[in-house]
Image 1 (cartoon, rainbow, N blue to C red):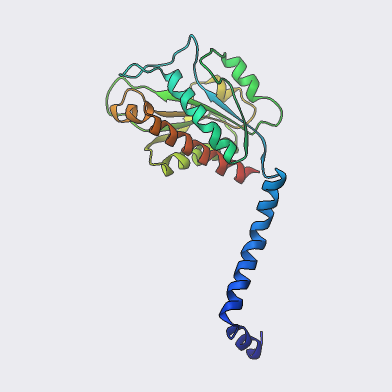
Image 2 (tube, rainbow, N blue to C red; image 1 turned 120 degrees about the horizontal axis):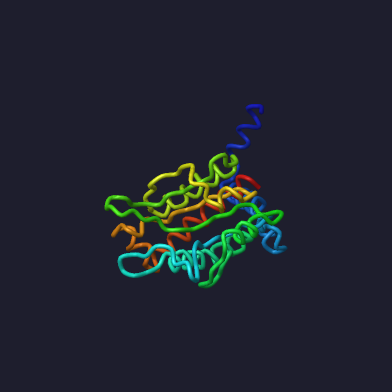
Length: 225
């Protein structure tokens, strides 16, 4: 650029600068508006949301008498409007209090095109002092499973939750080991801990959990799209 041209740019009227900035912003945003109008910004592939337990299998129980199956289903349902808002295609392995076998959960996750299995549970430890969420992936899990685990943890941390750990699970959990798509299991908190129980059994706490999970899912899907 010559000095003459540089000086000309510097002397551009402030009103024109404002117009140019507005035009640039409009042009950058236009593709997003167009995608929304045409419905083309929905992310490809389904996320399988798997609320653990259900029906005859209550899971563990909190000190105030609320079953794990009830907590995780409530969080999954709170995720639904947030997933729709973010244009994330999804399927629930159960949307009510019913028993779904582990084999059936894996079958749902192994449909062609599924992007991720997210299984939701609550943790329990008989002694006090354990708190926070845990994110698990299978031994020998894919790179995408590792990425998903850490991004979902980041989403929950963003909502103010304490991370207990993100780690490989060596117990041979069927939903992790037999899923062909990337898979993670989130223990939302320790149902045995008084602090965790307060957010696990409150509407506001469960909504924040749902928001953190969806934030992590969205980051994963954008990163691996």
